[in-house]
Length: 450
Ligand code: PMP
Image (cartoon, rainbow, N blue to C red; front, side, top):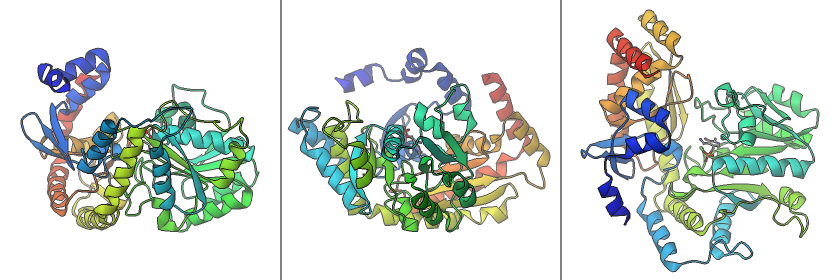
């Protein structure tokens, strides 16, 4: 039935999306030439209707760690459907959620003792905020400048980027931000002993900013000292992305609360999870009356759980976590020379297969750079993202709103050859990006699209 439907209506996706869902987004895709008709996807590749292969360095915003349409995860889903498992009884439980919780807890420090499943990353963070407030009896929440934790109101209140929060206020009371990497600023806030939780990403997804040496160890110690819960948001960095199953392992941390989502179900089924300490659990779920203090109709659902178990198995079976570390090092090693090669390339950074290249104003060609940046900050990065896609068939992204930063979050199944192809393409587009004709062309298209 779905096959016939897809065949009968093939080619209508953009028109239908514009009509019934989001015409503004369609205008953006058309303007930048990303309005392809996609035929299928596998591993690290997308294929369009003309049979062209695209290398996917965006990875669905980092949810395809085990590769798109991973066969092991797909088989687990088909099997679960065929078994007609008795999930979501609601007043009753099935086996799969307990099994996935067991697998997650087996892979995390003993401090984490319980799992609460959700349907997305933002929901996992919302749960952390609610449970953290309840467990500590405090209301204040600290996060960092430049943070991203999701777009529902609680998570949004912890976001450190005005682009996401403006127009949607008032946000929740009690939320404050400190500079990422500044332990003194953190202590100044924590010292008041009224902060319920400090919520932080191991590597800031927006901009791909890494912590200074010693920061997280100190932050965790400060949280413990002042009775604040240390909450690590691994929605983007988790499940192998940075070369460890969870990025906090790089610094031997033991968070009180941990949030995961994205790749947990191999990218197939919405899923999220909050892992919490025994203490937090005991404080919140402290009686029969409070046994379901937080939850959601769809979480946990058996399909997401089956996909989660299969995804963890797939990461292990193919050594994808180590692979992310090795290939990430290779990607940085291959792209680092671009800093010397091009004046417009300021820095290459990353952890595992979370990678970014930051542009900066060049000595020569300053005028072109300034014209562009006056039109819109970060436009130079678009001048790279667009031809990477249209000319070299590589899907990438700008690392955040108005940021002159190119970012990659490829599936961890990417190969050395893919990285070599990307580096060649990158050199080509950066060389051409600052040419005045390119600048004028993009400006014209952007102006027309307004
Ligand atoms: N936290 C982080 C660090 C994220 O990167 C994201 C998604 N980009 C979220 C939370 C929100 O996850 P979701 O989109 O599943 O709500």
